[in-house]
Length: 75
Image (cartoon, rainbow, N blue to C red; front, top):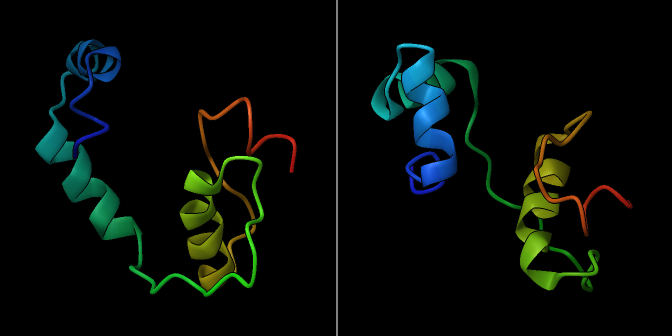
């Protein structure tokens, strides 16, 4: 919710005639909450991104969608 409320997203969301609560409701219907896996050591160049990787590992994700062009794409 915090991320979707950022200025760079609010205009895009409004253009498609939606709202943050509507998007979140749709995402919740399509997703499953997981408990992040425990990582033995930092994985990403930016340790703040490791929570994304820990969740992907726990969910056995086939891909990660991220706007982080500096750290996650290199993996």
